[in-house]
Each structure stands twice: as structure tokens, then as C-alpha cells.
Image 1 (cartoon, one colour):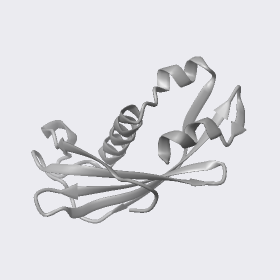
Image 2 (cartoon, rainbow, N blue to C red):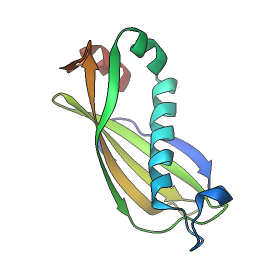
Image 3 (spheres, rainbow, N blue to C red):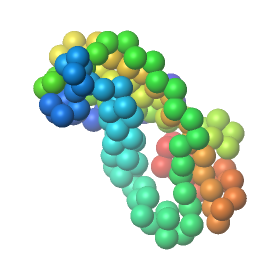
Length: 131
């Protein structure tokens, strides 16, 4: 993973996330990635509710997912997440790893930007959380 320390979150596929082919519908991978990003941020002390109260919004600007191996009902997996700064952007590098062998099922780069009072900002106050 690129960026600094990697956060890992263990999850399990639920039956309703699968399509008629018996594999996880591609849209659900975005849910897995988002949930893992939010959990990482919470563990690092970032509260999105508190940021919003201060008119600071971290928003997704781009999602790039590469699907490599399908997940199926009841599969257990880990979402590994790291983050790096690229100018004004925060890039979240994420992988979904099937357990127990950690086979890569999908990898993604989620590009986010920050607005403060409606204006794009580098938001240096967030840097401390991702050092």
C-alpha cells in the first residue's frame, strides 16, 4: 500500500449483497471501501459530524476500482486502507483481501478533496491525522 500506516478492517459478505450470479454486486465494493475509510478516520480521531459543524467537508472526487477476484456470500475479507496527500487531494489507497490467504479481490484509489466554507482547501488541520 502507498502512503503511511495501513488500517485494516475485517468484514463479511452478507447474502443480500450478491447478485443473481452468486457474487457480490460491483456497487457493494464502494460500500465496503467507504465503511473502511470512515472506520479508519474514526480510529484516528476524525469525526465527520464535527467537521461538518465547522463547514469542513471531505468529498469524493473520483473512484478508480480494479476488480480482480469475486467475493461470494459469507466470504470473510479485510479492507486495507492507507492515505497519502497529493497537493490539495487526499488519496485513499484500498484493497479488499479475501481471507484466509489475503488474495486481492479489488483494489482502488479514492480521490477526495476538502471544502471549507464552500471553497476548495488543502485543509492542513487534517494532516495531523494521517501522519
